[in-house]
Length: 290
Image 1 (cartoon, helix red, strand yellow):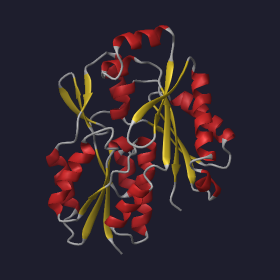
Image 2 (cartoon, rainbow, N blue to C red):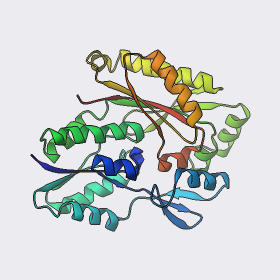
Image 3 (cartoon, rainbow, N blue to C red):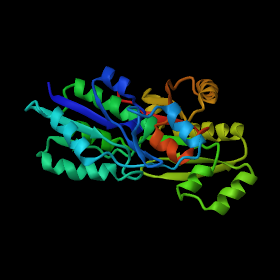
Image 4 (tube, one colour):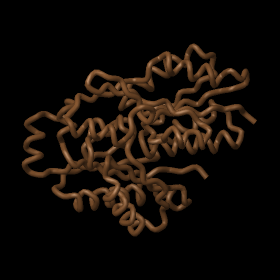
């Protein structure tokens, strides 16, 4: 049996309490809020975070400190036969993956950093796959190879309540944000692979949910048709301070896809919420290992 330790970050949506139950380590993502440093799920709760946003605080994200990450790795590698599979958020959305890859070079092949180009509910599935492979006796290198090979076997679609936070983060011009607000435009975005891209523009939550359901149906019938036939697909929902709408959407997805299980209805990680604000609703479709 291989002695493989699984590490991810809080972008996965896995809480510290869940990590303890799973027997993994979750690196909390740091925030700077009005000049003070906070760590997701350590000294910053979901409720406190959204209270800061409501007060229009100056909120920004950062990478974990190098020393904090290497200290964690060093502790996990105290067993001479231990190996680490480190699963950060997509390299296309943060530099934390590249930083971890550079640091891993000093560990003599004992730390394997995965760039499987996922975040949130799809990143969480990667962690589950890694745990299952480790339980089957796979090495860290084998797990890394599997996760990177299957990286693109997932999709996320997300709709936003407001364009305010995209504007604040420099991802949208003030003029475009103003026009979008006046026209009550609700963008539907997609994450397939490394990047967050525009997908469709609608003017209501009802229309946004229909667009997302149609997009999932298209993926399930085309890109992932073979996986669906084998029963190797799973649905999940994530949201930003939007639990009531998420519960409604979950039921709509179950009715639309009775053959695809819906496993998670989770709050989005705060490092994602920072850039999109409250009221967002997302659904993911992911290959699951059996």
